[in-house]
Amino acid sequence: MPTPADVWAAFDAMRQQGPLVQNITNYVAMDLSANALLAAGASPAMVHAREEAADFAGIAGAVVVNIGTLSPSWVESMHDAARVARERGTPWVLDPVAAGATSYRTKTAAELLELNPTVVRGNASEILALAGAAGSGKGVDSTDASSAAVDAAADLAGRTGGVVAVTGDVDVVTDGTRTVRVTGGDPMMAKVTAMGCAASAIVGAFLATADEPLLATVCALAVFGLAGERAAVGSPGPGTLRWRLLDELYTLNERAVISGVRLS
Ligand SMILES: Nc1ncnc2c1ncn2[C@@H]1O[C@H](COP(=O)(O)OP(=O)(O)O)[C@@H](O)[C@H]1O
Ligand SMILES: Cc1ncsc1CCOP(=O)(O)O
Ligand SMILES: [Mg+2]
Image 1 (cartoon, rainbow, N blue to C red):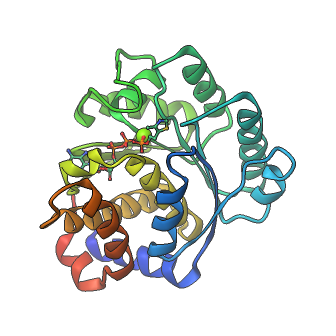
Image 2 (image 1 turned 180 degrees about the horizontal axis):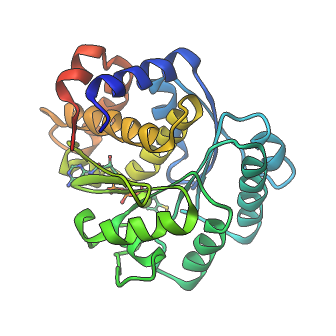
């Protein structure tokens, strides 16, 4: 079981190395993801043209593929970048936004799963849909609790050979054998669009500078959740939370991480 000290060590290492993280992400998420990566200590690049997506994957420390506003040419770029990442042993994250909402999304996410993402990070309805279970979702939002998708996540991890993270009131991270729960965050986080996309981007940053994907994912979600939890304190609404989250990612220190992170 990782400890809060492990979380701090992984965060500190990521900040010191400042990894380059390629994002093929959606129009809604680009700004928050890039700012969250910068605030946390990584270098974001939003690079999706077919002409350069694969080349960029060759120089990135991690690749984050997010199907939020997908279209056919973008999906080709996603495949190109994921293929290069897999060939080179570069970690890559799949965020299957709204998988289950339309057959195009579900099919696209299923095809990307064939390229063995190091981590799949989604909400419970998305993970249930990808695993072929009942999850319905409401577009990009989950209608299921993360606890309902634990078995689906383990099943999916068995299929990809990687890690699957289900976020929500509790974040559940599994490789099919080991399962870690990250408690924290704040319900108001779900009222800021692209919050999950930013969480996926932060997972990419931690993967780039850690050896072990399960540990990296737990640490990333613990830091992100703690930043959101602290940002929510005294925030009158999602607008303030959104900006304070960036400040928290920037200022979180060892004392706050050691006393604030809760893993089980
Ligand atoms: N009810 C909640 N309580 C605490 N944290 C939450 C809650 N809902 C979402 N979060 C946090 O918000 C972030 C985004 O998760 P989520 O809303 O599940 O993703 P998505 O935006 O993809 O649906 C994660 O860090 C998650 O832990
Ligand atoms: C609203 C919306 N529509 C297409 S992508 C997107 C952003 C979804 O972000 P998240 O999954 O992090 O809530
Ligand atoms: Mg999402």
